[in-house]
Amino acid sequence: MADKRLSGKAFILLLAVFVLGGVLGGLGTYMAGHMRPDHRRQRAFEQMVREVGLTPAQQKEVKEILKQGHQRWVAAFQQSQEQARPQYEAVHAYVRSRIRALLTPEQQPKFDAFLTQLDAERKAREQQQGPPRPPKPQTAPPQSH
Image 1: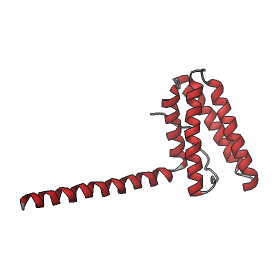
Image 2: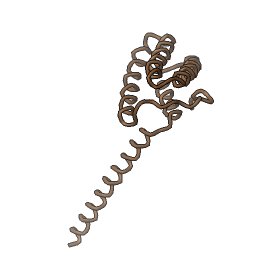
Image 3: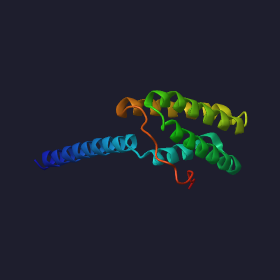
Image 4: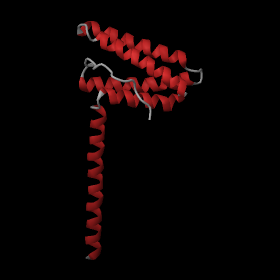
């Protein structure tokens, strides 16, 4: 009888752990998908630093390129939505080509893999939330921690 009570408690505890894991995992996924754009940019920058292996000098230059790209993106959204989308894509291409020019031959494939992942995340986010909304002016470039 005591064994049945113990196995019943173990089952309830195991079930609670799975339910709690599902809830926390769903919450984390929801929060990541609805992260503020400035936090998403900062996270992407930090991920690029790690995955591509940017040197401190490259990080400084990339921050400036990203700042200029963000300014261009803000300007693109001052126009109608139909005109903004092609300019939005042009800004992405501009920023990517400027960053790629800074990279060593060893870093470039890592950057391409990083962009593939970033594009997949952006596409999934746009399917859930719609096209990008007009950005807020950036007050400071991303900071690495």
